[in-house]
Image 1: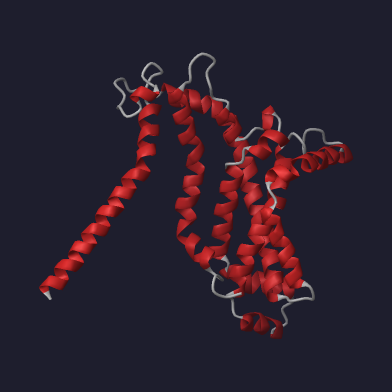
Image 2 (image 1 turned 90 degrees about the vertical axis):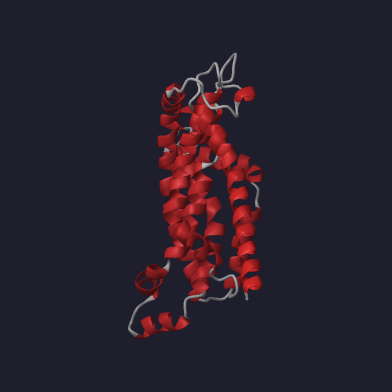
Length: 285
C-alpha cells in the first residue's frame, strides 16, 4: 500500500510540475508585455525585452489610452449589440430547427452550416456593394457602408450559422416532453420558447456571447474594408500605433493589454459556462 501511495504521490507531483511548466510558458508573453509597457522609449527595444524597466513610467499607458480611446468605444458599439443580436437570432433559429420540425428542416440546417465555410475574403466585394446600396436606398450616407451599423450587420449575418449550430445542439438535449407539456397547457410556439426553453439556455448563451464578442472585438478585415476612420474599432487603431522613425514598443504593448482586457473579462465572467454549453448536444442530435 505504501508503494502504491508513493507512486500516486509521485504521479501527482509530475502532473503538478508539468502544469506549472505550461503555465509559465503561457505567462511569458504577458510578462514581456507588462515589463515593456512600463519602460520609457529609450529602454523599449527587442534587445531588452526580458529586462525589467530601470526607470518605471506610465507614459506609454497614457499615450496608448489617448490613441485607443475612440477605437475602444467603437468596439463596444460594435461588439455589444452584435453579440446580443447574434445570440437572439441563433437562439430562435436553433429552437425552431430542434423542437418545431417542418418539411425540409434538415436541408435548411445544412444550408445554414454551409455559411460557416465561406471565407471573409470571398464575400468582401459583394458585401461592400450591398452596404453601399443600403446607404443609397436609405439616404443615410456613412451609416451602413463606412459606419458601425453596417459592420454590425455584416458580423450578425456571418455569425448566424455558428450561433444556430450551438443553440440547435444545445436545445436537442432539452426533453421534448417539456415542450409537449407546455402545448397541453395551451402555450404556442413563442410562449413555449419564452417560458420553457429560454430560462434554461444559460450555457448556450454564454458560449455564443463569448464566441461572437471575441470575433467582433478582434475583427480587423471587415473593419478596414467597411468602416471609415471615425468608426475604426480597437484592432485598426492598434495597428496604427507606429512611429515614423522608431517603433514605440512600450506604447504598442500597453495598447495591446488595453485592447485585450474586455475579452478577458468576458471569459472570466462567462467562462464557467463555456465548456458545458459547448459540449451540450455533442453526443445527441
